[in-house]
Image (cartoon, rainbow, N blue to C red; front, side, top):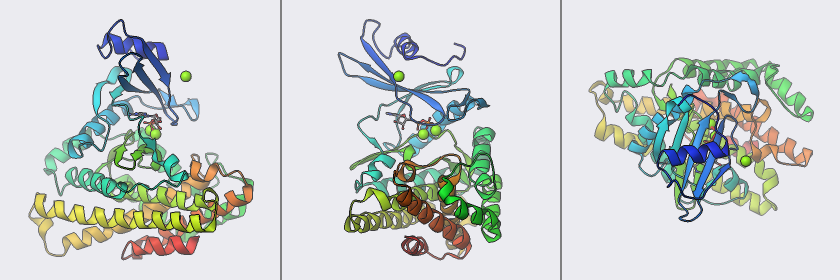
Length: 398
Ligand code: ADP
Ligand code: MG
Ligand code: MG
Ligand code: MG
């Protein structure tokens, strides 16, 4: 079938043709996509209640419009990444029922009983299982797709299926370039101009971003999710599901770990508004910082255990090398976390945790907190010795 963007009715017809629902079934179809790039259809059989999700890529970025063409191949990358992640981390990603590269379509498990984590955090929900689940996801996906956990020739061949130049360029520009100059892609409140202009002039910051950007461009450590913010994570108190890996490519591991931490810290900044009292704010912020610490310590422990048990080569067992590797990974995590925070304040795409704060004075306080913490993480990344550095800078920044 040649590519065409589905309507809600097309999705039903296709689902029936593929035998997902009986021909006579009464199927409801709703387009529920809230993302920037794709269509997402929720299909339900009115009688049996059976439901599935169709995700279809559009040949352009929905957020900008048809003037920004974007490859449909990202749907193949997303399906293949979900399948790899599902094998490595059963239960932590939606099950893929089918994919149709020509239609840029993935048919997957309906996770509507979960909530998008960004929304849950805005409502100050606690997720007791999250740190354990996400550290497992990170440790297993990053270790087993790297040269530490995978045959190195197989890894190079796998890399070839995840080059993803167009999606990488979005990251290279929107995260590692535009926020540091007066780019037309930026968008920010006029009340933030002085802070943003100071950042445009901050050469120490630019120097660190240039190093981190080089890492994103040149290091092929592991198959990354590539867009692991809290809008790409579905949660319930007892369940975690990672979605939306269309940015997957071989890159530096710290980029994924840092993305999770950055988005928890953006919510931490946003609690300036979402908490109703000082006590609530202190409590929820303490919970977020505790979660960040547990994610890193859990990740590090699991990654080292996988390495000790499943490491594939002799040289990687050289005494001292694992400690060196983990320290560098921590530092990358901190640097990328900082970059991911900064770009969400005044770059092209913002986060609801901060943008939806209506009172401009409070919104500005949250924006300044995010920029302050983000800059401190970027500038300090190469001298950080432990995850305490992040916690300390977060406390200072608020
Ligand atoms: P985009 O790449 O456009 O950001 P996402 O994969 O993040 O698309 O999906 C956008 C939205 O669609 C999600 O925030 C969620 O509300 C809904 N969605 C996506 N996948 C599922 C799923 N498997 N089950 C239920 N809802 C989903
Ligand atoms: Mg609709
Ligand atoms: Mg998304
Ligand atoms: Mg996406």
